[in-house]
Image: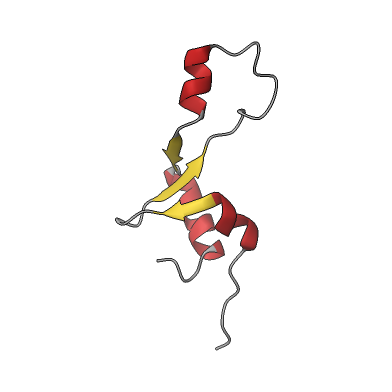
Length: 66
């Protein structure tokens, strides 16, 4: 069976933790920031775990990370 290719876009956006959880940056932090509260912007800057329904799709894009 041939080797699988890693999806380079997914590789840049997702990281795998030591316990094999998938972490990503939150969206909506790039522009139109004046109307967002400081608390909201601060929370958008933090990492977040990928939700359960999306995990299988991301695992297929990162075949050798698990």
